[in-house]
Structures are given as C-alpha cells and as structure tokens.
Amino acid sequence: MWWVCLVILCVPSATVAQTQDAATRDPAIRQWLDVQAVQAGLRYRWNRNSAGVETADGVQWHGLTRGRLLLAPEGRVTLTAMASAGPSFVASWNDTGIGSADFVGRFALRHLFLTVAPSRAVEVQVGGLAPNRGEVSENLSYDMDGYLVGQRLTLRPATGRVTQVSGTIGHLGDVLQPNVFRRFDDLFDYNYGQLLVGLRLHTRVSASVDYTWEDGRHIVREAVVVRPSADVPVVTGLRVEAYQRVDPGGHGLHAAADLRIGRLSVTTGLMSVDRRYVPTINGDRYGVGTRWYSIGTLPVTGDVTLTWYHTRAFRNTFPVPVHHRFDLIMVVNPTARLKRAGIF
Image 1 (tube, rainbow, N blue to C red):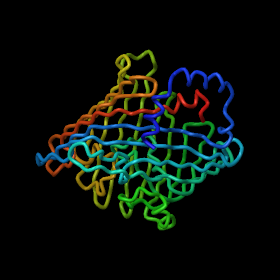
Image 2 (image 1 turned 90 degrees about the vertical axis):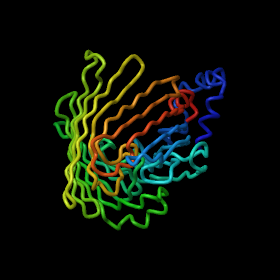
Image 3 (image 1 turned 135 degrees about the vertical axis):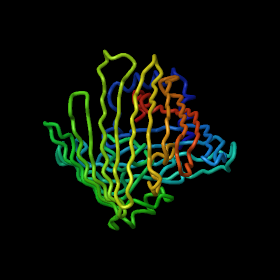
C-alpha cells in the first residue's frame, strides 16, 4: 500500500482540480466508509548502543492505512481497521535493503475492532485495539505502533472535569506478531487490565492517571499537558509525566516542551526509564535509560513532511540499546487532499 501514496503524488493538479469541482457534495462512499489515513514514508535510521556498537545504518520504508466501516447511522456502530508495515509491536517500518539490513516486505492488519456507541457518553469496543495512553506519551507508555486484543468500555461525561473513564481488559503480548488474526485466539486470555481517568483541569490544561495490571506487573502512570494560548510566543505545549511500578519496583519521568519557530515544529525533552522496564514496549526510539531528545517537523507541501529525531543517553549505569540515534524521515500523507477531491 505504501507505493499507492507515491503514485497519488503524480496525479496532475488539473485533474485533481476537476475532481474537486465534482466533489462539492460528500461522495456516496462516505455514507459507509470513513477513510482516516493513507500514508507512506522513507526513513534513514542510524543507531549506536552504549557499548559503542553500531546496530542500525540504513533506509527503511513505511506504509499505513486506517479507516472504518459505518454500520449504523451517526457512526453508532463501526468496524475499524488499521494496517501498516513493520514486524513487531514497536515497529511500523521495514528495511529497504539499502544499508546494513536486508529487504523486509511485511505488511499486516494490526487493529480490527467493533465499536458500539449507543450515545456520545458511552462507547464499547471489542477486538484488536490500540492501548489507551490517555495523556501519557509513548516515551513512558506503549509504542505508538502497539496493539492488544480485548474489550474496552469508555464513558465520556458531557460536563465536569472528567473527560473520560476507560476500563480495558485483554491480552497484551505477542510482540513479534503484528497480524491481528494471529492474536485473536488470545481475545479472552486476560493478562492485562487498565483503568484510566482523563481530566480537564483548565481550558488549556489536561491530565490523565491510570492504573495498569500488565502480566503481573502493577503500574501507575500520570501526565499533565499544558497548551498555552496563541499569545504565548514559540511555546505551544508543555508536558510532565511519570510512572511508578511495583514487582519489580521502578519509576520513570519525562518532561518536554513543544515549540513552533515559523513553519518548524520542535519537541525537545528529558526522560528516564528504569532498567527493569521489561519487556521494553515503550517507544522503540527511546527505550530504557536517561536521555535527552529532539524531534523537528517541517511541512514541505500539504502532503509531505520532513522530520528529524535525535537522542543521546547519558549517566546510565546499565547497558542501553539506544545510546545515540538519529533518524531523518519523509512522510507522504495525501489523505486530506484526496478527501477534498472527493475520492473517498
């Protein structure tokens, strides 16, 4: 699917304009299909571990499609699917064969779940889901490529400070099996449970706290996110988050700032994840250890963005797989343009 996006970029603008003229009304397909994302990308990745060994130096490819079937009016019953490249829980990128690794062509359906929402305040989901991270980032929670199978009930009060109360039970594991159909056998084999509460502390301050039981480990995570008004120069967001775990004991911290400089968006932060965070299923570009990092994103066109990621670990007394890493990423996402053109 990744190559479809590259073909789309070659569609002449005149043809798109003609299609846009014909798409003044929503196309009929939107009555039953909601396409949420169609994207592809290339990434150069370089990584060195704390022993000084270079473990990655090459180009990878990425592809992702996500959408849902509308099975009842007003989206009250939907079937959502997400497929992407990547061989594992923490990876949605495959090696191209350029550089230090051989070509990998894996592309799998990772999420497939039914949602029933009898009202705006109540939602039930069953199937192959993404973890509910609340306001906690993948730095201290689960990788953005992650998955589980199970059931989730979410309540969203219309008023008050509580924005959501979410309970999830299911099976978290099979970290090397992204194919949801190979994991459905564990749908009722429970080794995971989570209770999460989302909060609106102020019009520009949100928070979440969750208790998670994860295959015998007990973890509490908290996060507070501040989004300053447009009058504040440069700074567009501030984040502080933490986790505490028992059996085995451990804790972690993360603080970050989102900045905007012209068209360039930058996130920079400091974080620490303890050495017993096993299995390491938080964001794979962070992993364990104490580190600083920066992420910069620059829109090139409406469909194309360039992103860098850079991290360096420091003052760690244990082996760190991601000690010094640099990524340069190009992502093509024509979803909005295709919708405006009435393609779907």
